[in-house]
Structures are given as structure tokens and as C-alpha cells.
Image (cartoon, rainbow, N blue to C red):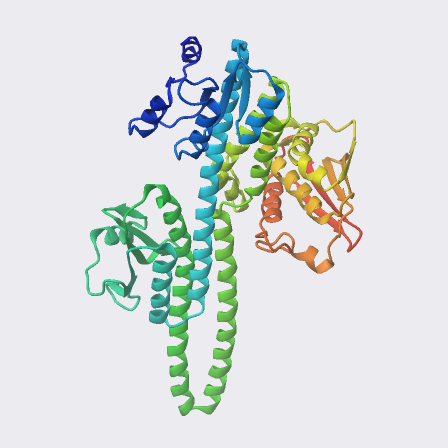
Amino acid sequence: SLMKLILAKENYNILTANSFQDVTQHLESNEITPINLILLDLMMPDMSGKELFVYLRNHPKTAETPVIILSAVNEIKKRVELLEMGVDDYLVKPCPIDELLARTAIHMQLGQLRREKKLADARIATQAKYLQAINYIGNKAAQYLDLELMMDKVLTAILTRFEFEQCTIYLQDPDSPTQKLDTVASTTPGTLPPPEVLEALEHCVTIIQNNHICIPILRNNISLGVIGITDSINEQTLEDKVQALEALSVQLATAITNAYLFQDIRQHNVKLQIIAKENRRLYEDQAKLLKEKEISQVQLIQSEKMAVAGRLAASMAHEINNPLQAIHSCLQLTTQFELARDKQMEYLLMAEEEVERLINITNRILDFSRPSSDEFELVSINRIISQVMNLASKHLSHQKLTVKQIIDSDVSQVYVIPDQITQVFLHIIMNAIDASPNQGELIIHTTLEDQWVKICFQDSGIGMTADIKQHVFEPFFTTKETQSGLGLTISYSIIQRHRGKIEIETQPGKGTTVAVYLHQTPTP
């Protein structure tokens, strides 16, 4: 009861159980809120604390809940046994109130971080699934220039990849004076479009209502048609599905436009053949013109494909691996090493910052195509490098990569958005780790060069060929099987926003040097 009063004063909601029967009644109750932490006394009246711990670990409601053991037994062997079983912490009674509160707070925070990471992982997996669906359907649409056949293939792929109940694709007839709406592909042919479809078409916005999801197909802010979905709306996945469908509609708009262009070219070709019968010379001239138009059409398709890739890259939730690695490193440091409380809090706060970065990752990715609204500030470049080194320390030590820092005493502050420059530096260092053999070397050198602060990252890795170097900043270009090739593209976009420069010098087998140039003061 004393412990309950102590914890209640810290605004914790306390649920007590004095027996195994109390525990089972609480867990079987439908009114119980999620349990965030369990304080378990080894001395129980009808079951040992160890047996109850095993029961709690096997119960679905408490399988992942942190457990702190309370015991009057101060034996190393007993502690080790329980910790090896999976106990999160062990306190010897009587213990200081400050220690009890501190450990309670730490494990509550760690549990929250684990839950948030689990949700983030699930969100990432869902987004990756939908991204694959977008790529698959977009590529499928690009294979056909026959509009009706294209839409049938797209409809089947949408139903299969997104697991929707019903789908209908409506297109406006470009040859109709009234631009009537035609159903070109549907799981329920012959039905009239619901009001939500007409509203989405008229206002060029996504409409979600009455189990209907209506996505306008827009080309230069002009509606070409609507993707109409009928499905049981799941709020947990609705946002990701809608974003994926909106990204897909951009690709479909390009494919549909190309199909219309192909129809126009085909009709024009027929006219050219009729004219050719009347005049051989004119036929030859028109045939040449047709050939030039066909070449232009191929170039247009390729250009639009790259444009779609750019827009898609701007909406993807990518570059998440580095923040996850940072969180993992911080949690390892706080759970596997006996650190002072202030040091633990430092790493937990660092992990919290990375979790917030994951939550806002979509806004971060938009920096690929447009400036963000983050604020610039004067900050120590050495502080940024130190933070990056802390985040990457585990990977550096695992790779046995020796780091040498050469700091110019004249270099102090830079005018930047700190978290974005941290992301750039971290990506460069992770690339150096990937490219370096065991017991390699990484040299970080900061100098003043004219009006620039120059930060060089020089590794002793495998280097790059001239051909690879030429393409490293292009979206989706990568030499790694498990990477999507957006890291350096996003880094380049960030440095451009800072009005800086990023340069690469490399030779195969002789390592790579990446130089980043930043300003010390605001630039006009």
C-alpha cells in the first residue's frame, strides 16, 4: 500500500493484485486498460513470483510488458537467473524511493519507445507494401497503349494488390462536347457512379464517404477521371491507402495521356496514308514527320516516367533506417550498460528525438522536391559531428573502422537546419562504413575555405568507378541490393536548400572523399 501511494503521487494509475486469482481476474476483465509496467514481488501467497512471471510472459496482454522484480533476496545467482528468464529489472527490498521512481520512469519510457517503434515498423511495412503495389501497377499500365486493355489490367491489379472489395475506373470522354463520364473498367458494370465520384471529379479532391474512396485522376490540375473504391474503411490503414492511390493516380494520368496521344497518332497516321495516295511527294514528307513524332513520343514517355519517379520519390517515407539504428543504439546503451542517470536520460532523449523524426518522416522526405519550413540557426559544426559520431559509434566499432577527426580551430559555427545536416552527415558515414573493409579508416576534416566551412569525409573503402560517380545523385540509383538509392539524392537536395555544395572525389580501390560546403552566416 505504501508503494501504491508513492507511485500514485507520481500520477501513475495503479492496479494491485494480492494473489494469482486477482491477477487472472484483472487480465480477463474487458474494462482493464493496457498495462505499461508490472512490479512483481517474488513472495506470493499461492504461487511463486517466478511462476507468476512465466504466466505473465505467456499471456497475450502482458507478453511484452516490462517487469521489475521486487525481492528481499540480494543474491547474484538469483538475479542472474531471473534476468536470463527475461525479467527487465531487479530491485532489492527495501530500496530507496528515488531509485524505485527512477527505474519505474525509465522502464515506462522504454516500454513507450518499444510500442512506438512497433507501430512505426508496422507503418513502414504497410507503406513498403503499397509502394510495391504502386510500382507494379504503374509498370503494368505503362506496358499498354490500348486504353481499354490498360484499364482492365489496372483494375485487376488494384483489387489484387490493395485487397479492395470493389473498384471502378471512370474516365471523361475527351471527344465528347459535354465530357461525359464513361465507366471503362468495373467490378460492378452497369451501375451509375455514386455522388462521391461526381464530387471528386468536379472539385479535383479526394472524397472519403459512405465506404467510398474516390481519387481524382489529375493531369495539370485537370480531371481525366476518377478511381472509385468501395471497401470497409479501416482507419488504421486508410491514410496509407489513400496516399498510395493518390500517388498511383499520378502515374495513371501519365499512362492515360500517353494512350490518348497514341490514339491521336494512330488516327493521324491513317490520314497521312490517305494523303499519300494522292501525292507521293507529300506522302514521303508526311511519313518523315510521322517518324519524328514517334521519336518525340518515345522521348515524352521517358520524360514523363522520370517526372513521375521524382514526384513519387517526394511522397515516399524513406531514409528511415538511420533513425531506427540511432534508436537501437540509444536503447542498447541504456539497457546493457550501467550508466549514470543523467547519461541514461541523455540517450533516452536522443532516442525520443529520433522517434519524433520517424513520426515526421513524410515532411522530411518532401525536402527531396521542395524546401521545408524548418528554421535555420547558428550551431556548432563540432556538436553536429559529435552527435553523428555517437549515433554511428556501434556501426563504426563493429566494422573496426578507425575514425580520425581533424578540427580547424577557426571553424566554429555554421548557419544550418541542424537535424537535416545531421541526416546528411550520418548518411555519408554509413556509406563509408558500407564501403570500407574491416580495420579501415575514416578521416573527418573541417576547414575554412574562402567563405565556406568545408567538411570532408575521407574513407579507405573500395571507391567508385567514374560511371557510378556520375549517377550517385540520381533518384533510385544504387549499387546495394537492399537500398533504394534515395539517400544521396535527398542529401543533395538538403545541401542545395542550404545554398551549399557537395562534391565527391573517388578512385576504385583508393577510397572516397565526400566534401560538404556550408555557410557560416545567413546568405541572401
